[in-house]
Length: 239
Ligand code: ZN
Ligand code: FE
Image (tube, protein in one colour):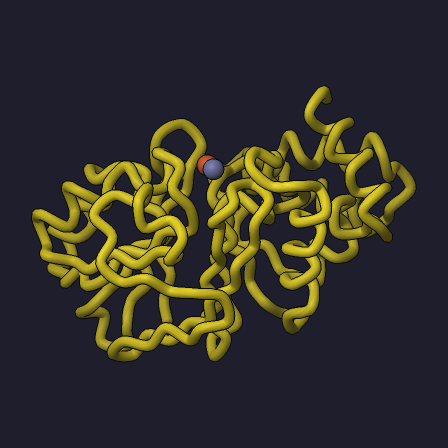
């Protein structure tokens, strides 16, 4: 399964994933339609499905236009059916969503929003985490509790260590600074620092990240309990 990273808006990432023949595709979190349409037209792809991790405008902004143009089906969490524009297929926690060659397990991971989900393409070891887990960071807690967010991250932590993480934003540099400030002696993190700076210098996305690296470097994943996690989350909000 090939993934194409599509920068959108200021710092969002949408992702196109293709089946084996590169004919059919899904888009994850289309922030806006234009950059996605450009790629679809150029490569003559059928955009079959639109997968939304949560209802924020920078993740669903392209839903309406793309659906109208390509007759795609929109997939989102059942409890968010009233706030995900044009939703067609409702999914729930731990369900396996399967269509054509696409197969993903749905994880309900509340905290950033109450209806946030992740799409885990377990056969390909790729997970789309929206605004819950970022590279070296995690999402702000808007609708949930610290405990919910902590437990949501825990679900992701338990996946195979070579899982690729595809998140909703290029926030890695700012997250990196926060991790270094709070974990300055982490050798792995300092190594990751060099890799990230190199990618950014060459105008490349820092995504995907590998879960193994996140477990060693992402200070939010290293937090032992809800209390220390909450403290970090507060510190980061004012960093
Ligand atoms: Zn969001
Ligand atoms: Fe976002």
